[in-house]
Length: 78
Image (cartoon, rainbow, N blue to C red; front, side):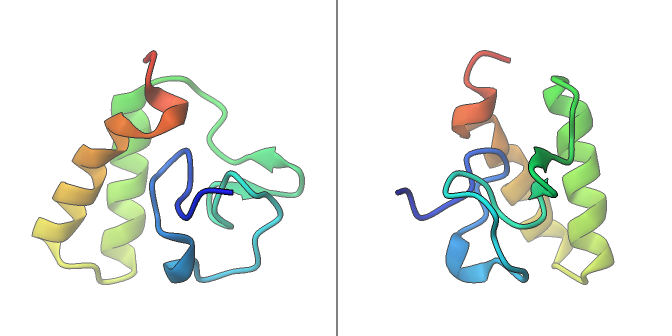
């Protein structure tokens, strides 16, 4: 088991909810399915950035974290 989400790279230690999957955080995976069903990396990054900002994550950190998503296992081939 890894220590971060394979979709958004959030460390599981920072996950705000109860995880249903060993691969994904509680924000990316709910009710037995991924919440973002598309395969557009840039769109997913925008969704994650907006979500982080709504939770008052510093804008520069949010930009950095969303940039790093491209290295997550889910997006390796995107």
